[in-house]
Length: 393
Image (tube, rainbow, N blue to C red; front, side):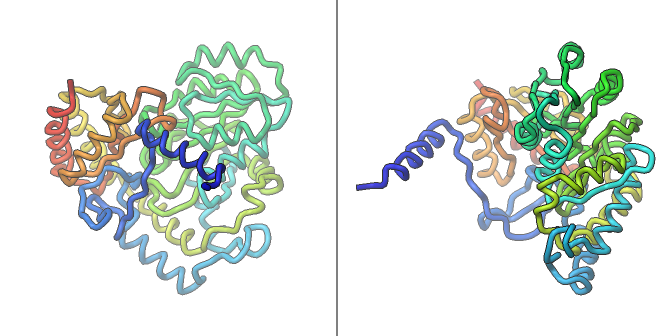
């Protein structure tokens, strides 16, 4: 007789597969790049968040190798025990100066953006506080809000007027406006100037998750620089495994905010520090991000070319001018079938389905990189047009 607990899990997994929502890992053999080897096959890939093509940049790789020989491959302990190395310390100072969300800002490294957002919300917010979060925020912001035990109010996506009414009516001790800067599945940019204005008028904090803006917008300095924003009330999170090409994340904010995280954020205190070699690789990456606009200029040209070609497709192209270019198909099973058909043609574009996106908005998430050539974009567009003729009604 089968174990009833295992049988229950098996039935749920079967239902997930029947609904077209099963997730499957693919094995990548080799470095990230425009063409990657997946499950033994070379594919033209538009699936990575390596927006500037730095994940396999020779200068970044060399910095990691040199650091491995100097520091070894593991930090050995948490930052607050003996895991905080000279490389970590240097990187934090450089990131704080580069992003500069306020005068005299400090930065704090984390092993992932998920851990960083948990730290921000659980260390700064608690019972009797209120968090106002964009409905399309990344899951880690939602999880951090729930773990904080503050009241959570999810306002309609990008709706500043609705947010103003809600935040003005709260009697909470502390108020937090929490938003992605660039929304990971739509590619649009949050109205950060209006959100900061609301935060300042209502004695609130503005928490900005710039996972997909750092390195790309504002001359590489991110979404705050894109809009020219600085304030003591901004708590800025940037990830380092996307445009920066390596791994980890950081929070940059007023020194009092950072010290509060050091003293009270469980996802910082109780986590082993990332290897020093990643910090040295990131210092090399940061230098390249700030060195010039060539990569970002090329990326902007690729985005414009893709949007021009994709406008003729039967699926809805969302209004994004970032490297994230979503094509909304609707039905989950159809989105998976389209993605599979593209892969058969040698092109990798992932299908994104609920609950990552709202019901009936399954989509292809096209991710462009400065490592792509213009010919790669045209090959993608040709493949999409061919597949669309088979699937579009």
